[in-house]
Image 1 (tube, one colour):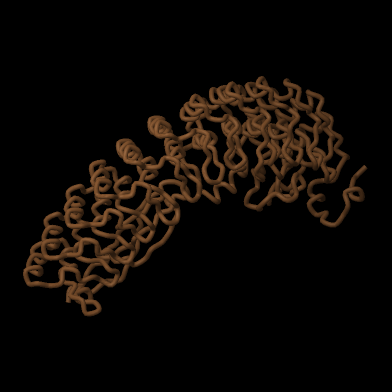
Image 2 (cartoon, rainbow, N blue to C red; image 1 turned 135 degrees about the vertical axis):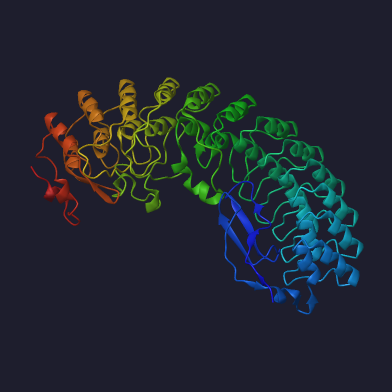
Length: 568
């Protein structure tokens, strides 16, 4: 009895071209299409490694009374044995337990001679395994025109769908053989068939790949360019994610309206901006796209002004990540200017709720949220607010320790202000753009450091906003001010500039804390942060060190009123 070494690989990855990047993996052992496990995972690759027990060859010889020697020989690519067994008269359609036949294996290996041998011996050309995978589906996966044409001549069903709804045409649109796609359509393949769960069509697969010749062929043969996936992705959005202007032009020529929204109301312009495709967004504007169209409550101008993923958490949970990439800093200013010139509202408010400490959940306490330093509900943010927050030192980190600065970011702020942005518009919890630029929002945890990491970007943003007339003593609903934000972060240079600009150095938040008391020590998210050097600076600048409650005491006061705990 011969031992068969354990082997496994992916036979039929069914990639969802947009949305949650899900891949249905057909995990097989011993080069067999027998599906030993099907999993849905979030991943970018289609390779997995599993270990299966050793399988005895004798156990593969028969199953349920079926003679499986022919199928095993074809699976092993043992052509001589397969020919002998056919000559012997074995049943060429004997299926394994999962429904896989010798012909399915021959198509999998793209073994045309073996396909011919089996068809001539009476193999069922449309026999499918338990997942609906047919020999034609395997030929499409291999992008094999010769094998597919032979199967079609033998009567293969061009519309035979797998249990997922995936058709040979969709697979061929992904694997990229335009002649194979043409052959399938000529044999009656439905160009508008869609997968069962996601609603993806062959056109979407071709756009996602991308295969431009196949896209054009599908459009020429009647593919509907206005269809939307179940999660809400349109063909134009697939082109936008890739930044593929040529494909967008083909879709528009086929009748696509650049202002048509997907089933959930998503507009393609902000989608393109969020995907980091500035050139594509400019193209859409030239085609008449509405500059105020929204995606998950966010406009294109918001997305061009800075990172907006925080506000898109709910949208992402429903759809998956957009893909593409983060927009280059150098692309932001030209796009902001183009949007403003095209009529974008500089004071549009984001309508989706968000909080920076998203791991806590949904915002319920606004700026009073004890785990969010100074601001808790970011709904209502304007493009100026987004741009200011982008510059506050660490736009992509929960614990902000690395400052970020791009010279174009200051120019974005100025462009928005020149374009009519209102400095006084706040988020729902009353936080102004100046507070966001100064440091409110992100927690900092750098123990044993005397001060926070210097942030030239925050310094530049605060200066621009103050010079434009921003109120340095404005308070949000929890009485936080810009100087509180700078102190949370230990940004000494920002504190100095605000004090020079007549900011109230002794302003108290809703818990009675002054900036000095925060520098002594304050909870930020789940951590306790102190800045002794910042506290010394505030004292030198004239802070009243007697006011408020010491930070180490404040964190212990769970049931004590602020009034009774206040020092004189």
